[in-house]
Length: 78
Image (cartoon, rainbow, N blue to C red; front, side, top):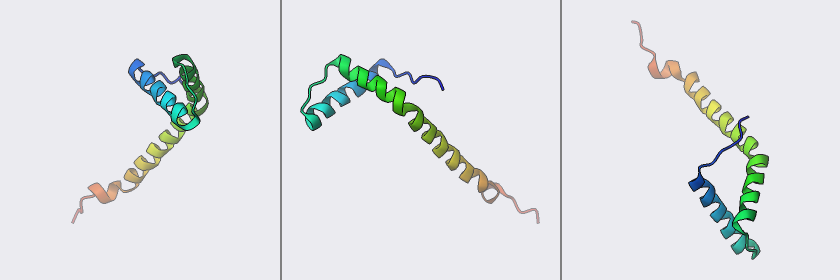
């Protein structure tokens, strides 16, 4: 799997969310560097699992649509 790449804006926003989370929930201040390292570790560890689940969810949704294709577009020949 290709490594997950975030835009600078999305990465900065997620770092800010992590800093807020650690501040409010754990009473701990994270530097930009530490928050970035945590984000990188989370993406590396959790990213593939979340990505694979998203692909499976889309596949299941599309399969449901394909299974009902005849009901959606079938034209009676009589």
